[in-house]
Length: 46
Image (cartoon, rainbow, N blue to C red):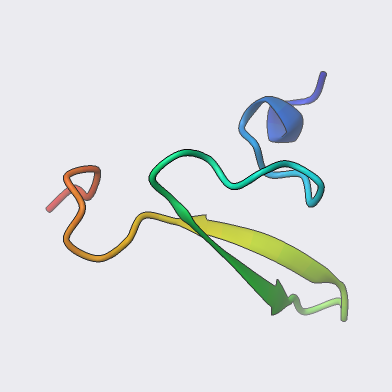
């Protein structure tokens, strides 16, 4: 299992708990999933 797989970054993975998934087109024209914590969540670091 790759690091990306274990981190839940592969496209076919479900969105990790408490996170939002956004699909964006990267610089190479491929669509990738970005996982972000919703604004105001406790997971954010200041």
